[in-house]
Length: 329
Image 1 (spheres, rainbow, N blue to C red):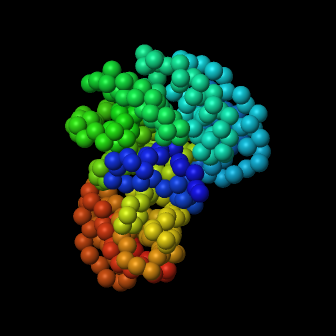
Image 2 (tube, rainbow, N blue to C red):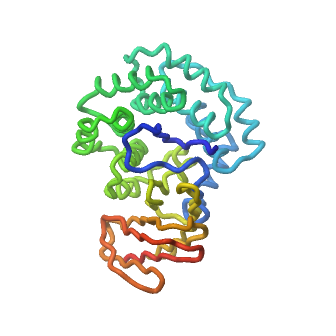
């Protein structure tokens, strides 16, 4: 069974879209592949702001492209126990268990989380990290603690805290909290804003949040850059959704069948080439950015207008070899 990525809503979570498992989407070229290679080179040299950032980044890098030397380097580091940096510690531990299968850092993280009483607000990412710890352990105390942190900090929520609030909202099916988050977007142009936008996209399926995530991509920190493949596409019961455009390969399960799509990006054209598909009708949804003045969708030589700020949906029994082109004007 595939491991979950950085954001892993439970089966009971009230979200419109589901993230793909770790490794199910892979950037294959373009500027983001270049940046990921540079990021990996920096991690190999041990350059990071702190040990927790290094551990999380290295773990997602290993999950993206397994490497024996990188795994040895990860296992050689014992994370320091700093309750005041619990959010960073939890994120690093979760990345390691999901990307490498090593549960030892998770044991340390749970011991730290068990002594928190909700008063520790040293980093706004703590609520977000606690929800992922709940998702990993099924211990509802961590979700309750995340909820306490979110409620304590109303109404002001920077991006990371708003991301944690969105996680809480979908795990507790709290429509009021989700509506409040939608009304009061965090003024965060950094990675925290990107994390919030992605969670709101999962919760609602609204293309506005994918547009926002696209605008914030350049603010990616090393940890987000290492796991960026996980933010390209999602799935639901009907098919696959393509959100952020980079040359990539996307693989998803649909019932008993498999969908595999290669995405090519050339200038103003995004091409989705079907490599594998179940023998039934399913939907490929391609985001048409809000900034596109005009767009056209071409399927099997036929063309249709595609509206900016929406998802162009192609519903059919796709076959291997089919191509769908989105041309932006």
